[in-house]
Length: 85
Image (cartoon, rainbow, N blue to C red; front, side, top):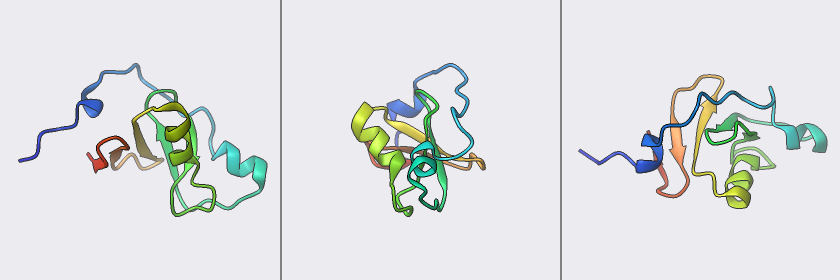
C-alpha cells in the first residue's frame, strides 16, 4: 500500500470556494470543462482539459500543492507528488 502524501495530511481550516466558477475563465470569456478548488486558499480554477488550465496556473504561481474536484469533491490532487487521494 502506498504511503499517503504529506500534503494531503496537512490540516487546514475549512476552506470554501472563493467563487462559483473559474474567475479567470469568466473574465476571459472561456468555456470550462470542470472546476478545481485550491485547498490552501479557496481559489477556483478550471481543469487541464479546459482551455485556460487555471488550476494548474494557480499552483505554478503560488506553490499551493493540493486541489480538489468541485462541486463533487470526489478526489484530491497533489501537484508536487502528482498523485490522487
